[in-house]
Length: 200
Image: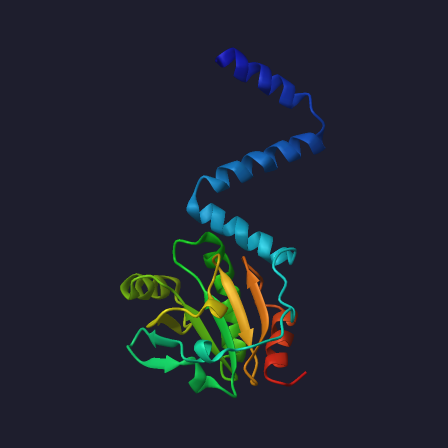
């Protein structure tokens, strides 16, 4: 084994500076992905490039009566029925604490919420135990309003993967639906929410 390492070291020393740099970067990525914090950091770095997750208007679908009857409960036990939010814009995100891409996009959702939470209803929905969510939100120091389904999730709103995000406009139309992580702390995301508010 030491002979193998010696040969690899000699080969590495003989490479160009550019080849060495790529080898070191590749090794650093492998090491980073071995640890959860490293994976989260890498996902956030990928998000910051803007190469994943479109946040544009990509849908035009009226909410059904069944979707409007969906009931959610927040961490304090207060309930809200989706139909009660008619006439208001909604940012609906399905996520979980064990979902790496969910955690990677969460800081950008928090930033968007701080910027537009007074104008748009943010419904950050999880199926997990409320105490698990409460602990996570406290540890990460997030202020996002988290909700839990009280009745079955309507087919129209179901998340096939996590994270899934929908943006619903003031007229009750789904303007955006996406699965996978996105950078929500962006001009495009703010423009999407302004569209939902009827301001663009």
